[in-house]
Length: 185
Image (cartoon, rainbow, N blue to C red; front, side, top):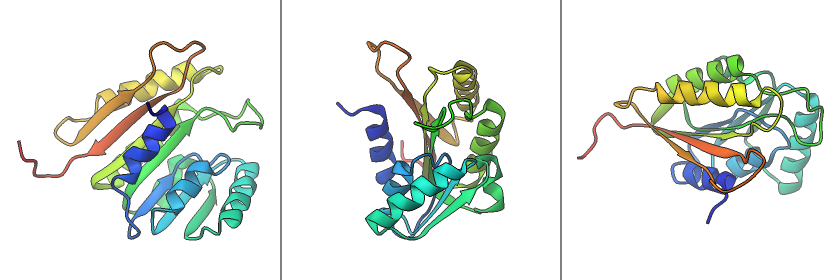
C-alpha cells in the first residue's frame, strides 16, 4: 500500500510531461521540487524561508536537475509568476528540522489554492499533503477541507487518501483534478 506522499507523487506523475509547467507550493527541503523537476519542463518552487531555498538548491545540484525557479515568496503570490500550470503540490505544516513556529497558514494556503485552481489546465492536478499535528494545524486542515468540499463538481473532482488506524494525527492527502470540459459517461 502506498503512503500518502507516495500516492501524491503517483497521482501527479500520471499527468506531467516534459512540456508542462508545475508548482511546488511549499518547497521545504526540496524533495517534491526534485521529484517534479525529473518530470516537468519547468518547476516553480515557493517558500518563505531562506533555508528552504538553500536546502533545495543543494539537492537539485547533487541530482543535476535544472528547469527549476526557486522563489523566496509565499505561495499565495503564485499568480505573479505562473499563468497556467499542469500540476501543483503542497506539504502543509512546517519545514522539518527548522523553526517549527514558521508554519503554513489557512488564509495564504487557501489563497494559493484558489489561484492554482484558476490556473490549472484541464486535466491538471493538485496534491495537498496535510500535516496537522502541530499548533494551528487543525485549523488549516479544516479550512482546506472546507475549501475543497466547495469546489464545483462539474469542474473538479476532489478525493481524500488517508490511513484510518494510525495514531498521532497521521498526515493525509487531498487530491484535486480539474475536469476536462467534455467527459464520456
